[in-house]
Length: 62
Image (cartoon, rainbow, N blue to C red; front, top):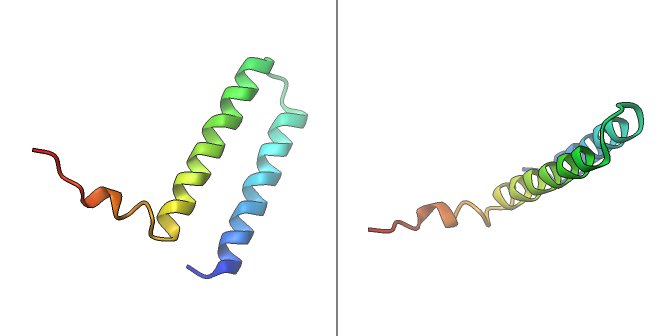
């Protein structure tokens, strides 16, 4: 995956998360949970995009 695509996706996700945090009225706890879930999803996506996470899927137990 080209680096420019990764940067564009990170910018779009960041802007969408900022818009949700600024303009959608939610409880502070719900916003923090949403932020954590989005950050974990983006980190996992980045690990998979750079091929680091895909090697973890090859491990079989049992």
